[in-house]
Image (cartoon, rainbow over all chains, first blue to last red; front, top):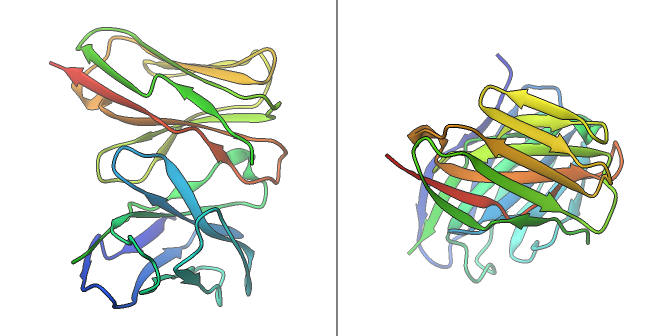
Amino acid sequence: DGGITQSPKYLFRKEGQNVTLSCEQNLNHDAMYWYRQDPGQGLRLIYYSQIVNDFQKGDIAEGYSVSREKKESFPLTVTSAQKNPTAFYLCASSRETTNYGYTFGSGTRLTVV
Amino acid sequence: GQQLNQSPQSMFIQEGEDVSMNCTSSSIFNTWLWYKQDPGEGPVLLIALYKAGELTSNGRLTAQFGITRKDSFLNISASIPSDVGIYFCAGTLTSGSRLTFGEGTQLTVNP
C-alpha cells in the first residue's frame, strides 16, 4: 500500500547539533510539506515543495533547511540556529490538485536537551 | 495569509453526547476538509466537501459545506472514547492552492 513514512518516531539531540528528519512517500505525489506542531497548538508550515529541485519557505522557515532531490523524499534539517526546536514535526504530501487534501506521516517528536 | 477560525478550541463531553464544531472564514473556499489527529500521530482525512450546501456522512460523523462557501460544520453523534483527539478543518481557495488549516478543536470524551 502507498503511504508516507517519517523516521525516526522519536529523536533526541543535544543543543547546538543539527538533526535531519526523514520523510519518504510512495504515493507518486508531486508536492510535499513540513509542519511543526507545538503542544496544544495548530499546524505551522515550515517549507513546501511542489516539484523536484524546488522548494519555498513557509511561515516559520528560520532555522530549518530542506532539499528535494527526488520526488519521493523531502528531508528536513533542524539547524542549531533554530532557537526552540523541541516540537512534533509532521510531513505531508499531495497531488498537484490539492482538493483531495494532504496525506500526513505519523510524525517525529524531536526533543533537544 | 488566509485564516480559518475554528471553534470551539476545546470540548469536554460525556460518552454518548453529540458534538458540533465549525470553521469560518472571510474568504470563499472551493473545498472543505475535516481531519482527525490521534495523540502522537499525524492527521487523517475524515471527510472532504466540494459543493456549497453539500452534506456528507462518514459513520457517526457528518459534515456540511456552508451555503456561503465561507464556513463548514462537523458533527459527531453518540461520542465514544476513541473520538478523543484534535479535529482540524482545512480548505482550499483554488484547486491547486495550499491547504489553509484551522487551529483545531481538542476533544476529550469522558467514559
